Length: 279
Length: 246
Ligand SMILES: Nc1ncnc2c1ncn2[C@@H]1O[C@H](COP(=O)(O)OP(=O)(O)O)[C@@H](O)[C@H]1O
Ligand SMILES: [Mg+2]
Image (cartoon, rainbow over all chains, first blue to last red; front, side, top):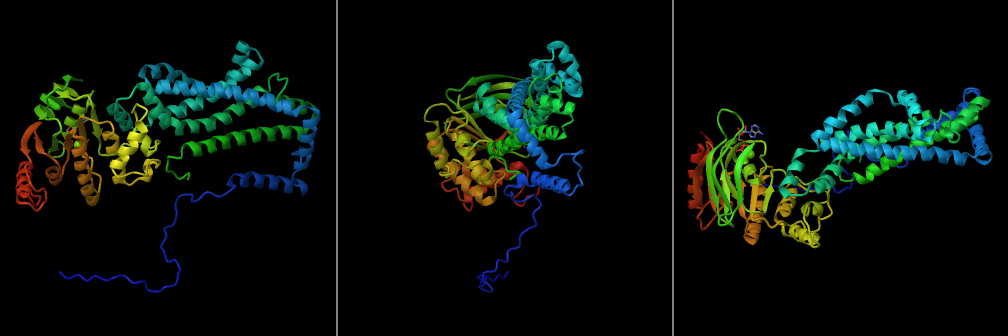
């Protein structure tokens, strides 16, 4: 057998980079402010449409009219108060729903007994639209704040439960085996293995939960609200003020968008250990 | 359900008597196996694929709740297990993985020291996915040794590593075992690895210890005549010759 060894010498000394790089199949690097591009584009289309008269004011008020209406509501009709009271409802209901959903998911995920008691009812509840249960809640809790919070809690509980449970059951069994050989307590096992392992599922559930909570908010505020964005919209409807209705819708939209981004940002921070296409 | 008599060992690190394990009604995987391992002794366990090496190891580790069988098992109180995959929790940084479940104020310090011992000083804050396969396995070794086990059970810990990394891991494991002196039961499918590392090689066949040889070599290099003779003996007992023919 003969073999010749050559020292490799560069063919030329110019600095052109002749690397062969594979075409990327993942989404690639993150774009800065990518987040705002979509919404700004929508706003631009709306402005141009209104300015050229393609979008009639009777159909949808122009952005500047909405801005004026916003200013008017803010200074003359207690818009800040309405926003706060809507936020309060949403936050209390969401918190209740998220905590309950997560606790139920951990119980039913870790114990067969818990699963047999909890899982069935939640799956049944899941196939009955929460909004269809509102009449029953009104009979139970009246049309006050209680009914509104319970509805929001229940509507956000379901996605949290489903996704946390799913994430928890998806944890690789070999980590449980490792924990057994190390000999840790059940509490430490939940804290160090179960909760972090179920976190991606929980956060996905959280994204569905915040949008569900807002949906619930919009609906319950149609019932006899004395304050809140829904109350403002109901009044505007009676007086035919489309611009005020749009103010309300935009505020709902901003709520949803901010909540969803907050969850996504949190997810990116706390899931730094994952190597995914998310990047 | 395994109905063993289990106990904590006194003289021997490991004492197994008449151990039976079966997954199916017809025929067991372990059929009355006896095994003793002295404190500080390094035993390599070889055997054809599917002869029950992992089954034995899991029985010693107490990880076979759902397997049928009976027998007597005596092991020390402090047992560590190293698996073929490193099983580092992906959501914990390397140091936190090493000291996972460890108590005491000096846990972090001991963990960092164990990492330094396996040559991973400075990687404490890395995520497991940022380590190479060999580095992950070294972190897993650090996680086992920081617990100061009296018995180290390892199931093909280097099976997924490339040949070069494996040789470096052999040297590391020997050094660590000489410092910490745990009794070791190392499962491997590699006869050379068994001879290089162990004080004793046992060969599992038909559910019992078929061959049990002491490795008394002054020189553990593969070119040594004693090494070659031992390799030939073991390969013969495994039913293959040097060229791999049956
Ligand atoms: N969980 C299991 N269920 C059913 N059969 C199993 C299980 N684990 C191992 N076995 C069987 O037991 C035998 C021994 O397996 P194992 O101990 O893993 O072998 P080794 O580690 O020596 O390759 C094999 O025939 C395997 O198919
Ligand atoms: Mg095996």
